[in-house]
Length: 112
Image 1 (cartoon, rainbow, N blue to C red):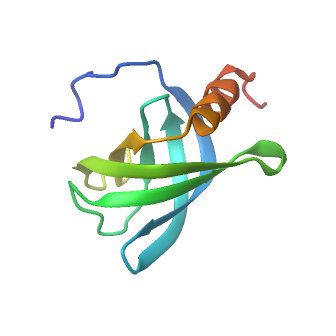
Image 2 (cartoon, rainbow, N blue to C red; image 1 turned 60 degrees about the vertical axis):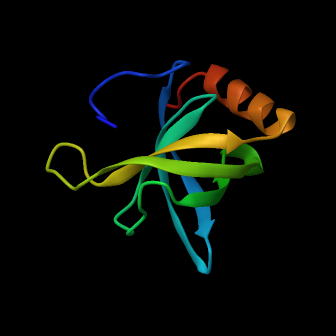
């Protein structure tokens, strides 16, 4: 998939939130830099490969923890001066409650 082409099904909000992720026996803590109902960009230098399935917990403001039951890496962006490295992630299984939390978070005014 070409990360420069827009195939988004819903708008994304630019933000920075901590994310705990796990895939198999590996886990880590990185940052989401944009978020939508269907996916996110995970800024990371970890070797996450296209097709890998991840479990995610997005740590939002005021102690909010959004658990995404399953997601998959759809594309990888290697590090560059302008963008940094990371992966495009699609949510493939998410509860209605988690989806509602994401929608509410995306409606909040941006922090100064």
